[in-house]
Image (cartoon, rainbow, N blue to C red):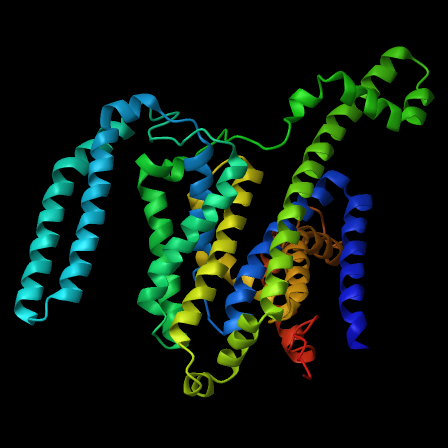
Length: 456
């Protein structure tokens, strides 16, 4: 295959697959898959920036995704005034104590040279911090979580438009990545992967159990939306007229007025769902294009060429005076910020924040498959990988069920073997994902759209 036609053919195949779902299942399903594919592509771009540009193996993707989702809650959810008035000051004071302790330990570690004095002061700071948290944090959390726990039980957010959280999520995820990077980027690549995975688990565990912050496993629902609600569209005159004008032939075919009205009502309901998903798709595509454009500029810049030089030969780059750890920290922060944006977008699309749904081992694996299959080091390859792998992840279950149903067609409908195979069919999606990865590594080890090597 001629290299220059790889990308157009890959995206043409992807478009055909989505069209098949649209015509075969429904366009609402197809648009739902497209929106999730776009978010997946943004995550893949963030990971590709870290791995494809700099060779950093980040196994904590879901941790940064969860931070982005939490940011969407803290920015867009209405504040719970009763919780703030009852225990908000205690939480703020606890945060101040933690930050002061962090600065104090950092100052002691940097400025005090005597080992015994240094350790004594650090132990003293930690002890004072624990006492302060015991006085302020514990009682405040109990008060907050006891306030209407069925509906709230947490502090809420700032009540700002949820789109604002997409930008804030980049700063939050980037800041946490900076802290993690300062600790872990001096480690070898395999240790870095273990450290980032462990930190990701810690972040998600905190979100699951700190109910005052995120409601934990009870989830946060009813978040603000940047697009219209379906029920509002179904009552809007201009939208009803639009649907009627698009489906004139179907409505004219109905002979009875009541039948015509029933058909119109059904079309309006279906059309409202499609319209909302199209609005989401427009917003998400805009973000994807901006991130892709900036990533492409970074790749072609001296900074991007320097990162690839460090990736290919750290010793040679270090000998030329390049600060390897500093450059790795930069790209680690930027890539994590992109993942945080995707996390906020995912929560925006769902309209809720569910900490229990973030499964680091499973979904981090999927994001990495996207980057590997699409083409590490190529932004277009990462976007294609995000679309293709998520499409296969969603469609693998119905395809598996259809395959098993066809395979067991000759058996009795209530046969125990048939019922067992049908019940087990959804688990074939993991087998399908593994097979796709193995086939890609065997026949296209550099990915469907591989990195372009400059001849200059």
